[in-house]
Picture 1 (cartoon, rainbow, N blue to C red):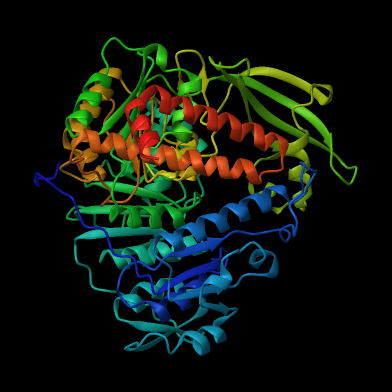
Picture 2 (tube, rainbow, N blue to C red):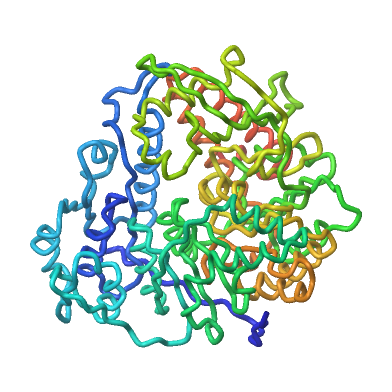
Length: 628
């Protein structure tokens, strides 16, 4: 691995072009390419959001109690999308034009802000030309076949050209390379690959499009595990499965590369020859990119949570606390007996922080493999095979203790979950809704055995194992997560990224503790002078020639980083104000909520926030009360 000779590296983020915001049906990648080629002004990153499939319209009136709704999963996903996009538009102060493209009536029914924007509805390529053609002055146009629209988009953006469909055209023009930054995008035939191209264009990077590989992260994990056990063929097989798609690309002289990928650890395959980051194409990549760019121009929260149940004789936690405090970050230590499930879960969700450092044991844990039958809403019988893990968090303040049950489906009616045969099977949406609502009934179980559950990456607390089953993150902040536990790169990373983290550092296998400690120290020594990516690249350097070379993977963008706070008192006041804002928000939600179980959950959140204020912010609360 080559360490950069540059002492400090903090690249600038692109600007956000707020003239346009696009909401495009996830499967309409070609339509997205046409639209972006017409409206791009090379003025920054255009916020583009991909709307997933929706199986039914939203309720006109919300049910007061929970009902058996076959469209529950789809509705929940669509409502979250509406809230997130609405918040994104508000954060940039609105937009001149909102382009809604390729959506059906079901999808449109969830968008609550259309009347607040100058909205342009686009259904097809003809609408693109007629409705968008006059909005931005272009240098001309370029014709290409429909199947090559995505491949021609980088050239069109770079040369201020609009794309036009001509199926007789076979040429795919290429831009001249700059040898600076590089963005590599897997062509997944979704809108996410298109705004991967748009992102690369917005930062002035070269763009390479590659074919996705037919290998999932469980297969990758198995190959890594075999390799670390001494099976050389496993590493060769892993490299062969991934490297063939990128072997034509020259990386050596680049300053950095960002991969838009369906979960592949390219940094491992390329041995971190340059700083390498990843963006996950399946986990809200639209909001991930937008949040990173938008937050880069805003003030930080200047706070952190450092977690460790002190399972190791020598660890980095004291150093991390001292280094962050030295840079005037307010540090909330959850260390030793304070590193409980209850404390970790509540702080992860409701404490405003910009950085979470985790030092503990991780990796897979034991659970139960269960085979169970259930009847769907049409009376048809199905057999589901799944893994089940229980974890709990003792509430020291109430006789009400959280029990988390994580169920991971493996097979349905003999078809491996997520396989090609499974995806092609004619299951209706209601079958999955019924399964998720009905499984866990011991009366219907045919067998159960104890297993080491694949993908059950956990964080070991002082009292229990934490499975990262949370709904909120950092009181609506977008923090960096440094999970310095073993095997922390896949499923548990998905939880944090899906909830809105702006970056995630995890390990690809069971790292040696002393090396993990040293890596963390080097990282935090450099984090305020470099971006996260370049600080991690420096930390990786000391692992060369060891078993743990290239063990870390970073999900994030190359420019994302931190700056020191002007003063610690100001940091504490900022965190206090965010907790107060959060408290008022939850109180307002409690007044509006009709659902009984939701009321209970919200009340518990309000109690926790009030307790944190009383414990950690007595002086600030007193001044607030007197002032009020």
